[in-house]
Image (cartoon, rainbow, N blue to C red; front, side, top):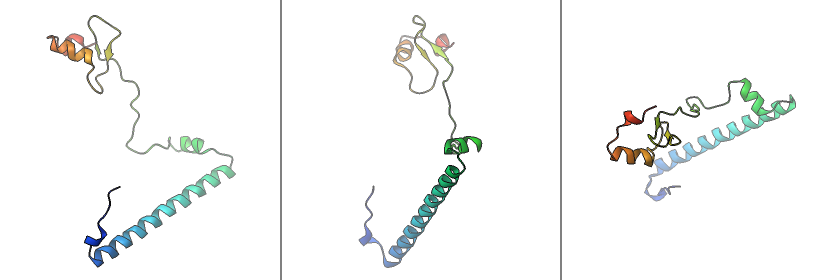
Length: 109
């Protein structure tokens, strides 16, 4: 964590920082209390939180999606066990083939 140089702040900046810290701590405390209430309520009704979240839509953060396995898009010309989906870093076998003059189209599935 980055250390904040408090001595460089003015009195009004320190007061604002104190106010911001108290506000953040209150919000976090409220969130934790709400989570505990939900846990207790679910337990009292005989539900597991996983079941509750699944019923409400999976409980995943909005905007995050699971990609899953990608289809094979490229295959090594001589060794068909070497494949690449096109995601992530280009594999060494593909780099070597490109350096030897092959094109991506020649390895495309």
